[in-house]
Each structure stands twice: as C-alpha cells, then as structure tokens.
Image 1 (spheres, helix red, strand yellow):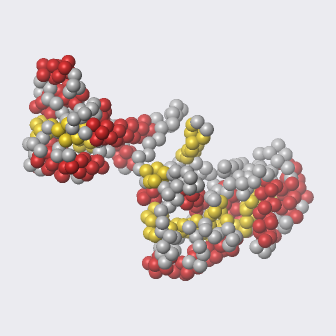
Image 2 (spheres, one colour):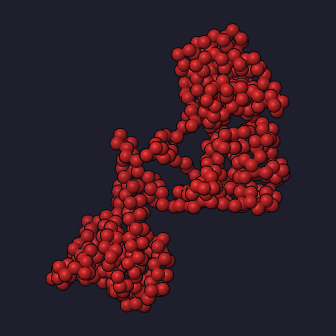
Image 3 (tube, helix red, strand yellow):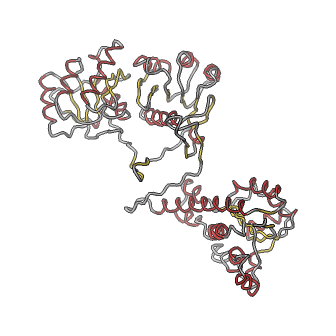
Length: 507
C-alpha cells in the first residue's frame, strides 16, 4: 500500500492542552481542518483556518450539543473506501469531502464519576459523537488515521514529521488498535457505572496502564502489573518492584490497614512473620522483629507512621527488600537510601478497590474483599469463664493478624505483639503445633498469649494442645457441629473462648 498523504482532518476534543504542536504541523502541510464549537474556537486562536462542521452539513449543533457530527457528510467522509468505485461515485454525488485524519479526545466520563458528580452530569459525559468518530475512523484504518486520545498527540506529531505528513498502513492499523482500546475501556466504565448493584454481573474490567516487571513469580515467567501504581506509592529508592514484591506489598498494605495505633508488620510470602504495635515505630519494629528475626531477613516491612531516625537506625541493620510508610523524615531517608537496591515506598492515602479477582482454570473468579474486622463488641463468650480485659485486647489483635494469614492458620499473640503463627497447613492441628514450636524456639512464654484461628475447630484437639502449652484464651468463628466439645474442654480447664461468627479463610 502506498503512503496516504493527509489532506484533511476532523478535530473534536474535550481537553485542548497538548494539541498545539499537532495544529501547527497540520497548518504547515496545508491540511483542511473541520471542527465544531469550542475546539473550532481554540484552533482559530492558534491561527488555523477551520471549516465549521455546521457549514459542511448545513445543519446546526442541536439538543445542547448532543448532535453535532452525526451526519452522513461527516461519517461518509471517514468511512468511504478510497479504492471502491461505487463509494467514490456516491461521495461525488452527495458532495462528501474525504477526511484522512480524525483527532478525538472523549468527554471525561471516568473523571466525572470519580468527582462525585450528580447522575445527570455523569450521563452528559457519555460521549456519543466522539466514540462514533473513533470507531468509524478505526474501522476504515486502510484509508484513515485515528488519534483517539491526547496521550497520542506527541507520537502522531513525531510520525507525521518523520513521514512528511503521510502515514503507512502499518501506522494506521496500530493507531486503530489504540482506538479500540480507548473505546472498549470507555464503554467498560460506563457499563460498570450503570450496572452497579444489578444482579446481572458479567465480568468486565479494563485497566490500560501497564508496567512490565523483571519477571513473574519465577525468572522463566513473564510478568506485568496493570494499574496506577504511582497513585498509591511514590518510590523513593531502590530497584524496580518485582512480581513477588508486589504480591507481598499488597498483603502488607491490607494488614497495616487494620490498625489505628502505631504498627509495624514484617511479611514473607504474604504472611506476617512479625507484627507489633508500640508507642513509637522503633518500639513496634523491634517487637515485630523479635517474633522471628530469621524469617525477617529479605522481607517486606510496613509501618503506618512516619519513619524517623530512631527507627531508621534499627531498620538499617536488617537486610530487607521493601519498606513502606506514609512518610520518611529527611535524615532517616538519607540513611535508608545508602543501600541502593533497597526499595522505599511512600504510601499515599488512596481508596482501595472493594472487589478482588484472579484468573482460575479457563476463567476468572471475583469476590468482595474481606472487609470484616471483629472487635470486642463482636465477641460472644461461649465458655463459663469470660476472658479478662487484657485477654480481650489480645484476642482482637490476634484475630486481625489471623485474618491476613494463609489458611489453615493459628496465631499466638499478646495485645501488642504476634509471638508466632502456623500458616498454610493442611491441618489446623499442624498449624497450632508449628506456631507453638516456633514460639518456643525463640524463648517466648506462651502463658502470656492468646490463640486465634481463622476457622472453627471440628474437634477439641486444638484447645487441648493450646491448654497444655499454657494458652488460656481463644478466639474462633465457631460453626462446627462439634463446637460444644471444644467448649466443654475449655470449661473443664478454666479456659476462655469467644466466637465471632465470621470465618476468615485466605487461600
């Protein structure tokens, strides 16, 4: 295919910024420009001669601007096939000019929804003419170049400068693909807005921002992150985040969100190997580290307060992959940056999605995020002995950590610190034994701890093992047909057990 020289263009954009270099280039190549309304006024301010679409169609903009470009003289100029004799004859008969370039920037639907605007304002930002122009020009990429977003202006200017105002078929096909990406993304967000709360829930997601990763879970796997990571984090130091880093960071953010008091959590493979609160971040970090200083090596650390110099001096003694915090004192940041590969993330206050999904088999599964967090008010004491005030605080703490730990899991903790956990076991008994063995290996006194389980006890074996280890208070969801067996054991051995009614499996 021979290159197509651009001789005419239709420009209809919502945002006018970044458009000036393209307008200047079209002027230099004596391109006939068609436009409407505010875009026309802007182009004329740039010194361009513009043919009003109203003059082309002999029809005014009507219904408050809802109908401007929807006319055969516009769409015929875009869609007619330049190598089809019948199309060319009809174009001449109806005096339809050829349009070689279409530049569109759609009404900001997503931004309007995000702003909290009224439904009436949101509906008015559903673009009709623009989306139709994009689809028409993209369909006829054999003859027409479509520029479907202001993000593409620089690229198209470079292209037209390089090729002296013309385009190749390969160029036009590439921009057509971008156009259908823009239109499908736009329609997906409109659908999800209008369909919110309806029972019919076809799965539709569109995330256009893509960040290639060094690799996936393993070096032989390719990996990409889709999303606006820079909205949530400002990376202050270190190498590029890896797939595994991101999975652990996600788990860390979810866990830290549970706490209002100063907290530090250390995670490995999405499970906390240390988590503690304190009067300061330094105090919380040292307590979290003491839970399992071996596993903490190479981990991901999160704090929900600013990292000051006192905390940084302690953190700097440990090799870790990632540190997340809402702020860093200047001197603390300089110290932590002395390790060039250490990833430091400043976390912004961004609302997180309420849904989560992942690929599975030959499809996708989606669910609501687990946003339930139990407090003392949710506890229902099942045993004769009521837990003490101190035990209740410890049970709340342990349940929070347990919620964010891989099933089957048991967490042993005080009111300020996780002592140990058993994670991802096929048996809850194995999880408990793992937690006890780990706590004992670091010299913890389990008589000061409580036990949390992510799901019910089908048998009294776990409370018996906990009792013999010195643990005297337990939180679990309940719901087993044999709950009474566990309750009876607790009553016979002066243990306190509360039930929440909420299971927290995490696979």
